Every structure is written in C-alpha cells, then in structure tokens.
Length: 183
Image (cartoon, rainbow, N blue to C red; front, side, top):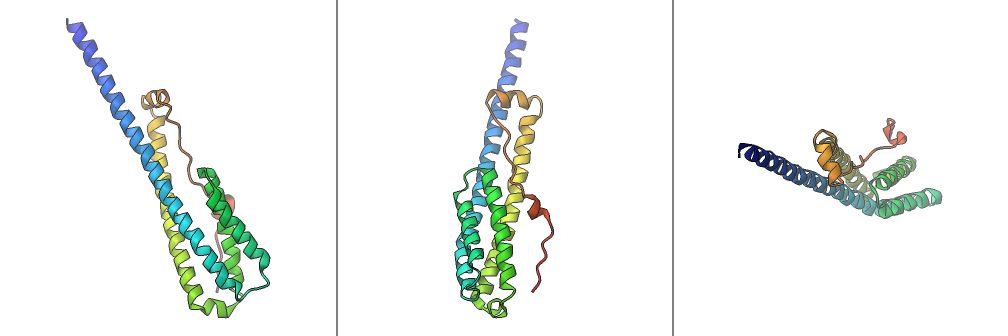
C-alpha cells in the first residue's frame, strides 16, 4: 500500500511540475511575441515617418534621386519582412540609408533650419530610441525563454512539447560601428 502512495505521489509531483513548466514556457513564448509585436509597431512608425522626411529633403536636394530610391527600397524591404531575421536585416539596411539621407541633409543649411525637417528628425530620433529599448527588451525576453528551455530537466519537457529556441534581434556589423554625425 505504501509503495503505491509513493508512486502516485511521485507521478503527481512530476505531472504538476510538467504542467507548471509547460504554462511557464507558453507564457514566455507569448511574451516574446508581444515584445516582437512592439518592435513591429515602432518599425512601422519609423517607416511611416520616412516618406515625410524624404519629401522634405527632396525639395532641397532634387539631384539626389538615387538616395531617395534607396531609402524607398529599404523602407519597402522593412515593411515586407516576415521573419525576425529578415526584419533585423531590413532594419539594418534602412538605418544605413537614413545615415546617408542625414549626411546629404548636412549639405543644405536651409533644410536643417526648416522647422518641418527638424520636427521630423526629432520624431525619428525618438522612435529610434524606442526601437533600441524595445530590441533590448525583446532580446532579454528571448534570453529568458531560451534559458528556460535549455536547462535540465526543463529541456526534456520542452523538447517533448516542441519548444524551440527563439531568434535574437541582432545588429549587423555596420550597425555595431560608431556613428559620426556632425552639423
């Protein structure tokens, strides 16, 4: 009789632990989706600001046609990216073209003094800061989740229920370099 109670107790504890861990992993997976969704919202906001910025610069820099085409192409790539990796790559490409756009704007003192341009630049800067924070939060959430599914005995249960590691939102080599901005 005692052996059956011990076996039933052990099975009960294992089932409760499995249920708790499964729910914990599901919650972590949903938190990752929410964090990525927040990044998507901010990337869309940035993409929505860019046409206004481009139109403002176009009035001053009519001969910079290739630059405007590159910005439009990079923006389109970001809007069409589906996976986390594709979004990160498209984000990096757009960041590079925006650096070029701001470098061109430096050559036009009237443009830098334009109130509309300044406001758009401030909004874009604010959005960039929010994107940076959101990427950091997303990556912390991914780290927590990936750690949970990698540790023993969680890894056994995670593999049984097909929990796979999530991708980090990473910067490319160009984005890791220091940026020099001068006015």
